[in-house]
Length: 256
Image 1 (cartoon, rainbow, N blue to C red):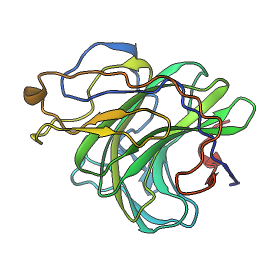
Image 2 (tube, one colour):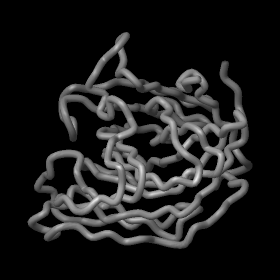
Image 3 (cartoon, helix red, strand yellow):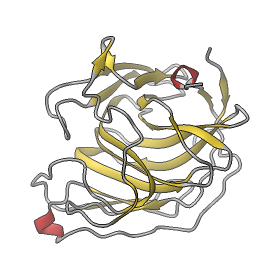
């Protein structure tokens, strides 16, 4: 059963990092909570433990190419062919979390249009909520995004939605969700793309965020970590182009 509800966005203690390619200490249980993080395992003609979704009149083609992946053999591709009031995305099956616990999310993406990252969570009382993590610029090369956040009080399960809402293509790979704060920069082979850092300043809930674009270790000389902004609580977020938009719940991905 699917239903619509207003997007509720609560941002609690989001941190972003500049990504390089050398490993460092990890103050977390580094076990990835997402199964099949790169879509390598196929079941019933689609990546196991993944779902695809559109809403708000947006039309998209979903695929899982086996050439040009950032990590492993496959990645997940969303191609929006008709723009509506909503978005489109692949998203991993919901995983159990503890409200108030700190988690670190990361993925690699490549897109020809700006994209966004939300967390959709289910609370113990059965209600749903949303946490907006980032508005990301287009990225011609594989780019790693990483953020640390605190699961809202009462959160029982969550998924991370890296979505695209404009006509264009978004590729994602190597999803990771770990408990705790992490400065690990693993998750793929570095390329020789020139060093560059993109600063994202248009997220409504974060003063600024930083992401790294395939920065070779020999250029960066390791990696740097920077915490951006203070925790901001947004009880109800308005879409930048108008009133709060409905979002489809993804109940089919929830486990009892």
